Image 1 (cartoon, rainbow, N blue to C red):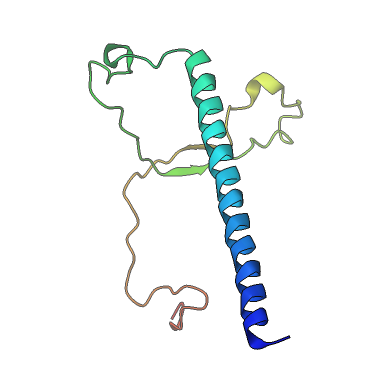
Image 2 (cartoon, rainbow, N blue to C red):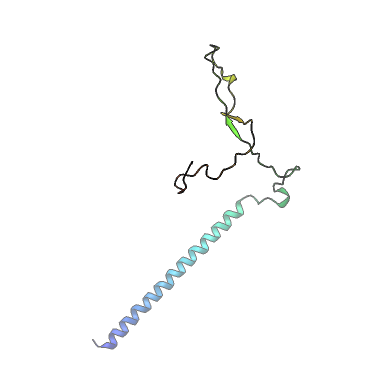
Length: 123
């Protein structure tokens, strides 16, 4: 075989590779078009989206704000002195209650440090 034959065979293989890539692209494009049509058909079967007037609105009093408070533990009463059992209706709903002092504790320089912060900690 001479060199010209090798060039013709190489060009022939290249043509089939380009043709195969083109066919593969057509298949992928067809699959994407099919998926979009199925999605559109599915969306047509859904209920319509709510209109602007059906959307939720703020209450008349305005936005609801969160409340901040300092909580403290609600200790169990010591019933050993009275000798009676503590009944379930005598318990409170949560294990904490609103603190007597609602003043925020402020950080004092040099009074504390976080673990791993490199600070000296409590001095």
